[in-house]
Length: 365
Image (spheres, rainbow, N blue to C red):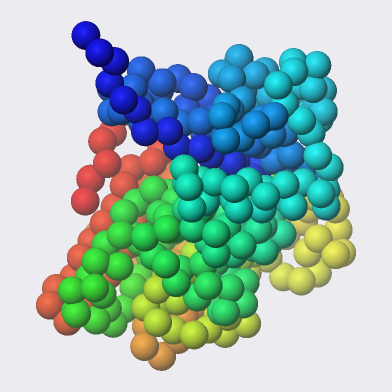
């Protein structure tokens, strides 16, 4: 029988850290599934923080699967992309020329075969490339929150052609928050309030405190489990939650910036990265927070409540920080690294939650 015609989808990946490498491996492992769906995902370029590895002819071919697997292994071992040049059929460009080559690919493919730019980096530096890609008719997929939390004008530019951008994974660990909020608004039913526990790391920390564990020990355990950033203060500062809250607030039409969000950090400035190293913070700084946090946990418990680190987005503004919530509420029942988001609109309250800590438990909403 005649082979099924396949739609070719060229992709450029920005960022090949843990998330980017997992995506590449997933693409390679799912080739049979893609073939059954009549799709061929062609990875034509991969960029890290310093360079771009790109196929010799992005119009005709991509980086083969063996090369992609070798790339993942090389980056896991800390090797540069240039170490793969000996494989042939590819080129390496260093920054700043690298980003120019991404734009060249966008110009060449955006309005012909199409091109998808996937941003799995953790930097603001991709904003310019992403805006140019949108201008050239490319599609953009974001795991990186930072391009959507820059200047409001950049957010508007990136989302001006909504069918060309997807950023569901920037908020809520893959929970369908973005899609749900967008559809509610499109239906003409305005959203008045969003409350969410949107950090798996801080969700784990808060639920472990209920069991009487010291804050310092819980944070160290979370780091050992891989829940936190290398410097846990990146999570404890609340800025990651604030970025998620800003994306949601902007979806609701609020023309605000990070400076407009009231963010409560879980550590004081005297324990900040400008004052002490990560090692010193873990060895001596964290323990200084135990007594204060324990008092808050006990005070909440006496009132039948628990502590959760939440974002609240309403008509009057956006706040991110610790809150007492009833133990039997949707937020209070969270355990481990689960996320939850409650969206209130004119007609009903929509609750979404997903179990992320245990892969054997199916998502529920």
